[in-house]
Length: 364
Image 1 (tube, one colour):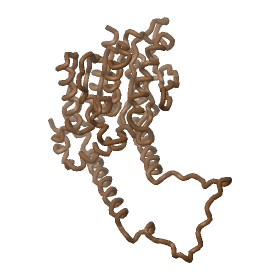
Image 2: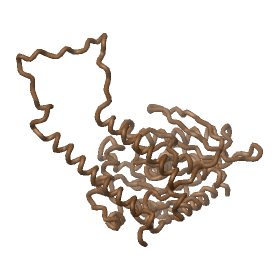
Image 3: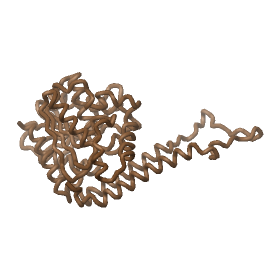
Image 4: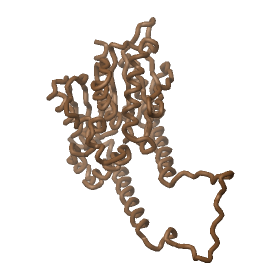
């Protein structure tokens, strides 16, 4: 199906961004190899040595150029997200929220925000542990479109959404995020009654990189505590960081060169993983697990013009081969970030409705 006209200008901007990123990387490498830069200048032997700071007056720390660039990128991403909600998204309704801090043995603690649906009386409701997207390195539960989506899904599906504010890479790399996810799940089951959640009706929800974490969590839970997770809903998930299942026909259809698409995936994996070989571990790439038996039923949503559609297809097939109740739905004519555009795109509104329908299965 042809790409929806809504995406025409966005695609042009995205192509330019990807080319600019690649060109910037090439320039940086050439600059590093250039032998006549300032870094290669050696002081003459007669030049007096520079005075070093004494221990009593330590030098003022400065962020590295990479850290400053990441900070700028994240500020820009947050500003973009705020604009997207205002111009093409749908604001979320007012709901009661509670904030919690969960300890993670051996790793930084993790923040969990629970969105509570309106209820009559004190009967517990189903709960969903949710993981945001952002290539492991941007995004968060405070991003406006993410917050709005959780609010709308909480109300429309009548479930409590426990949104996990996992740590971002590269400051924190795998397996920190997976361990934080497991600690949050453990805490949710232990605290379900206290926060108004039915511990017998808990599911998982993850978008893109968050889909990776949610899928990994089903494996960790099966291998450790075996909490009775009832459902996993994975939206445009990346489940194999080796890139083996990328479907590059999607990027060719958008006239994005193969090398740019592969560069983007390698950049994501390099940011998240301490070592390239970690991509073969099942908790990093859930599709590569030796077995998918005993995992919760799954609903997987993919987009026609998204190379990650291959990941979603392959993961659904692996789950079904292991006897798991799993379905995969591909939305035609749309791209990876479709769920954001509920204010202007019919397919995005249908996407929301389908996620809500899947989450309502927790009421069964």
